[in-house]
Image (tube, rainbow, N blue to C red; front, side, top):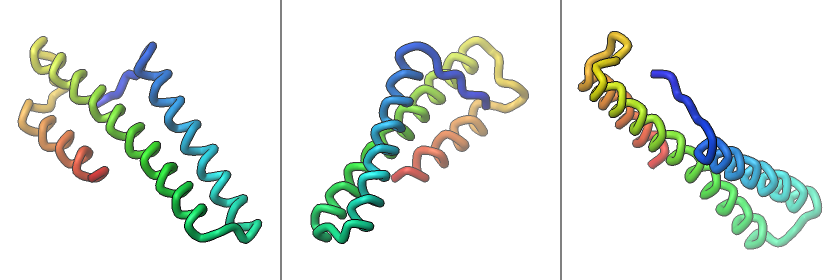
Length: 95
């Protein structure tokens, strides 16, 4: 299953990943500076949410593409049940 992110989908995922990257850099800096534990954990939670949202956006795009492939009969040698199982596994990996 190949993932093709384009246009708005690509921009949204990249923005979320860049946000998470900045937040993780902030967490590292906060730890190095000996900042308050509560502040560090709050920033780390925000980074985690940004990564989760990027992952869910990628999976949603993948599910949409798989449905299109199934409907058009292009399954790349993989049947619909196998595709569904792979997507479910990916989705659950973020849960």
